[in-house]
Length: 83
Image (cartoon, one colour):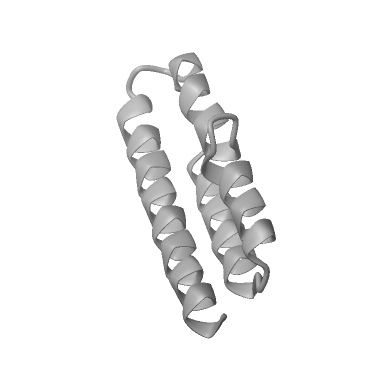
């Protein structure tokens, strides 16, 4: 699951960086870290993992979410500076 979370984070950040439309940027944010987003679904499924794996996977999900949030914030700021 750690590799998958890292892959999701990498893909999300690449898509967010390439986005030039604020509406699409918001859709990407919701897709990855929204209430029913990819990372949140993984967080909910954390209980299905063996107890010894949960802390590492939970930490990876939290770090990925923060990285994606930071990139969304950066790109939103960049968008409004240019428009």
